[in-house]
Image 1 (tube, rainbow, N blue to C red):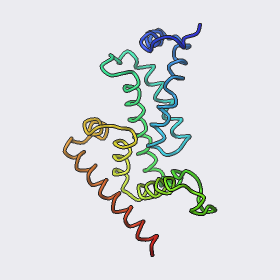
Image 2: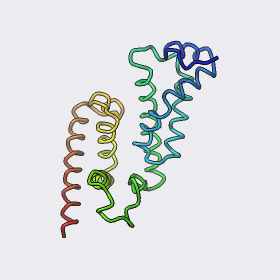
Image 3: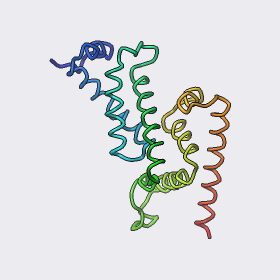
Image 4: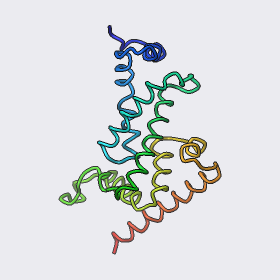
Length: 188
């Protein structure tokens, strides 16, 4: 029975009744977006895969709690973000996070003429981002990469709206300073 043409609401009803084909179709529709959300936070492909798998399991077991106040994708993404943050915090406790994995490619053997200007800028921003305190890096990721607004970030990070705005402002300022420092070091 092909379920690829079914509307998400129909699929979710089938999922609530334990239909594994419907669950597979929902998984296939949302897998990549949820993986991308997880990888932005946990920074490790295997960990992101684990987070994503756990998130789908949670979503399917708690599907009765989804009331349609937001889209299913937004509800699922919230689960992924929360699990990603939990996983990320555990990583910090157990080991230093290797932020060099963020780089698009190893540029040790490349000359600047071989790399486009936008790639250089992206790498510089990623390097500067890696120098920030963990909570600053996390809030910038949630706001700029994941597109969450202040209210959503406040809820996810369990802080007040005012603290969220202040922290984001400080994080942006620290990123700007790190970027300026990086540019000065290249000149000298």
